[in-house]
Length: 125
Image (cartoon, rainbow, N blue to C red):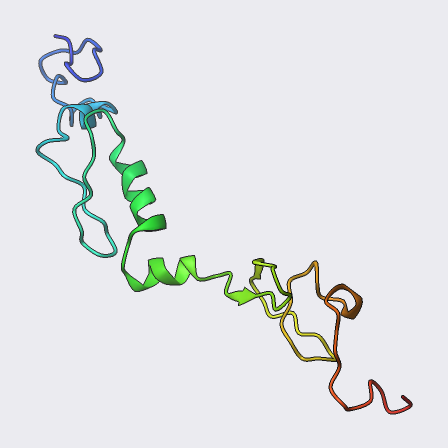
C-alpha cells in the first residue's frame, strides 16, 4: 500500500503514519492538528504544506507574549547615545569621561565628541 503523505510503499502493518514514522504526515493533518505555542499556549495558524515546527519557531521569535520569549528579544537594550546612531549593544559601554553609554563604534571619546564633566580626567590632570 502507498502512503498518501510520503508516497512510500508499506505493508498493512506499517501503512499508518505512526507505524512508519512518516515525516510528511503534517501535510495531511494541518486542518485537524493546529500547533500550539509551548510558551504562551496560543494556536499558530499554518497553511497546508508548511512545517509546524518552523511556524511555531517564527511565532516565538516574533509574536510570542510569554516572558521567556520577550526576554530573548530584549538582549540588545543598551542604545548608543551618539546623535543619529541607532546601534544597540548587549552590554553597557560607558565612556570614562562623560559617563554616557555608546556602541562599540562610538566608544572612544574622539568618536562621540566627548564633553567631559568638570572633574579632571586623572589625578595628575
